[in-house]
Image: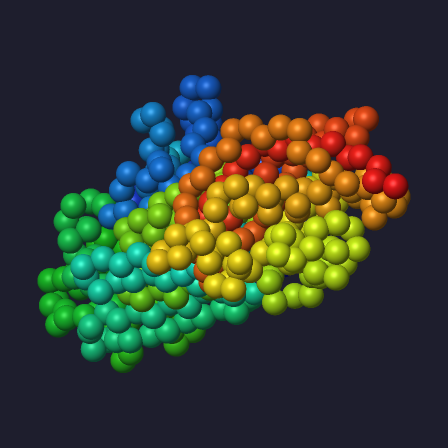
Length: 465
């Protein structure tokens, strides 16, 4: 998949909101502030000495009981997901989120007010390109309770949630967005929800001090006694409370018939933001919750880290190449059976990306372990060098009149076997500018998104005629 490069974004000016924390009941002010490139999302606790920072990083997740809670060296951020979902939904990449309490204000239990504030602050494009994880293979996480999150290739970030609460009042619901730009209108105003039996337990344990009927939908999933109604009237400071015909506790009109599934989608976006990288792919979440969301985000973060470490190039093999085999033969002197690169996909002054389809018809398979064909490592290095030769010869105006000769090969490592049917992707990067015809390159060869071979190559460009 070819990269659609876009620039990182922050906000133009700082902006604040005030409210109460859902679980703490404390008054809190949240301030969004612009942040430099590559900052990501960083929470700051301004009520603590030195205003310690907690990055929105899945490795800091400590508890997912009633929201996604972070802890870094004893500094906590509770219920981070609604704020983070708003940041992702508006495609803001870098942001400081200052709080004078452990928890953002619950507002109405959705992301709506955070979205409105960020829009009011305005977006500002930054100098550097956005880092984006382009999904090429399916990544899956499931637990023993039938919850599952699958991430698969797609042209942009898409999310589908499928929920089943197994109750009459709230059964199976689905929600989807095809474009992240739909978040603002379709998802942001979907509020958090609870079931009556949960509310009773939470009230008994004093866990929703900031809750009132304006920031959570309460589904009544059991017979409600007069005694319970009285407790709720006291807890929510209301003269009267009743149950609507649709099974929802008094005072709320649903924004969407499937508001619960949409809120679960909001939570997925907020929780997966903790993986720390923009995603180009489609998430399908079945019975999601904060625990499985964050466990999936941990797995995703590991995959992304491994890919960054391996420096895997992203190319769409279905697109026409920059150079086909005829163009390559116009530049390189090699010919069959020793021309070992089929296509060139990228070529700049500093790097080249090429490809070779390894087929059973390769002449070397006839004698190299014919019972268990494996591409010789030295020929992988040769193929890599030929791809590097394209980069080296780019520095001269008439490449057909030059040859490149090996001078040195260092740090060669073979990580996995290359067998018939594999597609080898080569990436070579200049380690220093070409001087006096000497070209030094770091070379990598990949199969199925995994590093197969690496080496540092030094070659000399020599005039042949």
